[in-house]
Length: 450
Ligand SMILES: [Zn+2]
Image (cartoon, rainbow, N blue to C red; front, side, top):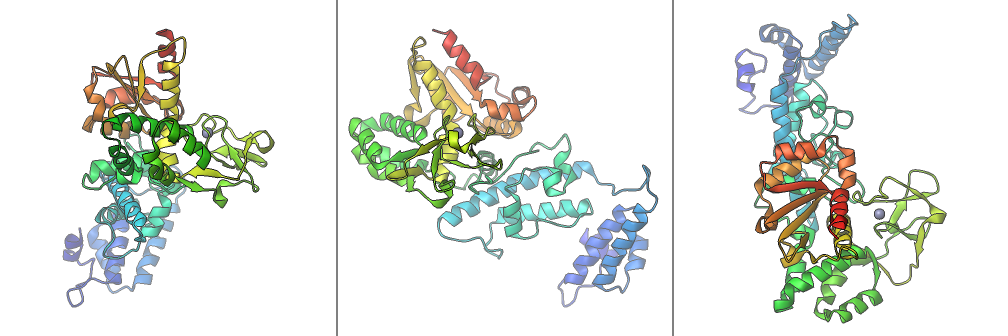
């Protein structure tokens, strides 16, 4: 387009082989005018020898010309919707990979700087988003790395991003959030999309899996059993204490894993407290935070049934601050949150009258839960968006592949937030040997097996 606009004279010749601010303004203004229906020739004529501020004034003039005949026939920017959709579908996975890359760098002590060393995925995402804003004739909003990162805590919708393509029916990532607004950690969707785009990114590390693996290696042939025990303890205890951890480690003869377990927790921090007190979610055990509703507290775990139901502070369970240890934010988001359903299914399967032969995280996480001496493998997913989940499953089922009966159970809160979730998943997933269900339906099924 630049070459084309240069040829018709819309863009002035480069100065000493370099394009400058003025050229960029010429390009952007011309794009908008052409989209408003003017010919490139007339645009070129009108733009000759105007300074950047005068060029921008042309736009204001053009938009008021457009707005002047009010009513349904007011001309609007015509956008090539399929091109916009294509750009948006490219931009989001690149953005996810860029965010995951910078998250990894930040954990290694490298702050985000908008310079040449910036992740090439983030840069590529930025270019595509800028193209989208220009396509729609809107002010570019994602032109700085820090603004873009801050915006990524918002769901991908037109209201938040000012990009109509995010609300079109064909947009697969509608409503997805790439960063968790509370903790600023990449969401499960973000990690999945990043993995899809940038297979070379080491994403396991950020989920603390690598440290757990090496802790289990210390136990030799007991490795798998230790893996299950540690994951289960952490998932059941978002708030713990040194004494409780010591008792657990001693009971299972797991003392070698003490440094790993300690590394998953931190002392109580100011952000864990509400009016000076520490409150525990009655459903999932995570620390509660101050709700937007006055004198109420609420749970931050999206997979928890209490997530959208704040409770009055005086009814919440207070925990003694002394000796309390809180699981670190990334462990809460990646292990404890998704683990709520895994534990609930495990408890349903193993409690009387069901009393099934079940194992949590068998074979170092081949799947979340196995039944019938490893005949059935169950994975629980809490992706907010069924398209992202289907794409991830189409790439690989992971360890679930090893089971004769393969079941994927979706978190009920995620299902209730996205219309026709299961239908979309069944349609988009190209695997026909997988059974898709909801966590609540699977629990009913397990009880009925008794
Ligand atoms: Zn909760």
